[in-house]
Length: 81
Image (tube, rainbow, N blue to C red; front, side):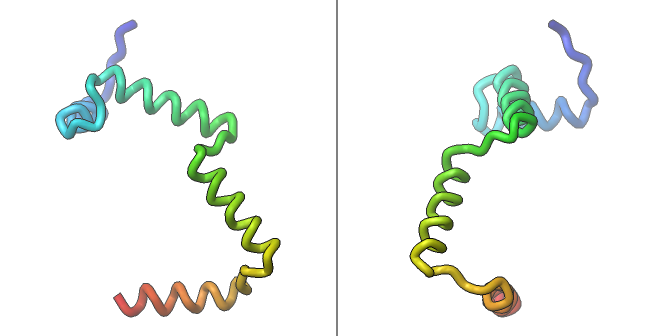
């Protein structure tokens, strides 16, 4: 299969390979397609599933906080930086 890609896409792929993130241009495209397939299937990665499970367990133990309290803490934290 041959693909005709836009120059900016080709540069991006080349940059990914040069940076050592992928061994070949084909690997970049395969990873992108895999991400697209997962997104379409609504699949979550293992890290996301673990984070969701942990949050649910914390909420079950009463360790959560109100959204307004969380928002205020985050706003304060980022305004101090």
